[in-house]
Image (cartoon, rainbow, N blue to C red; front, side):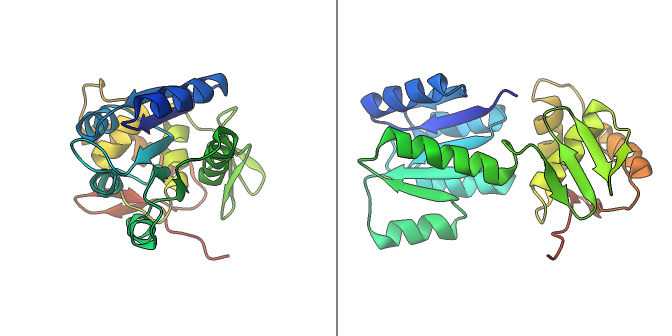
Length: 221
């Protein structure tokens, strides 16, 4: 699986060093030096994780995080020289997933990256929700141990919704994350695949949010 990471850091040396180690760890990396460029990258591509500095030329890390959260809940790891409580609290209030202060050890950063990817389900061999079990490595889906015969698109939509359970995913977001931004279509393609997916699921866990998109509710443990 190609795991894509967006790295946003204006210090050239840190940017190059972190990118080199991420590439060596097997990740695909897009690296940006300013906030405005990062904003364009995020909206034009799909990422499994964002490593985001706070103090940036153009849009700040706090501003970027707010914008990113309007679109999806891609894990965001904040890195900054600002170690004061106020900035950390502000980042977590805006739904940052983790926070590392400079200077940091690269090995520690890589472990934090791995932990966030595992937590989000990207590195998980199995993702469970209610009676559903998804195996991203071989695109298999099961309900109470029974195989569900899904197309690749249907599996990717179900995986996306379960990974973002509790959050409404807009039609445009599903379209871009599953088909890619270069795909020339509208929300009708999403609606058709959702309809087909629902017909194959033993229970209707996909809820329609009128005029916005779809969501899967969090199952109480």
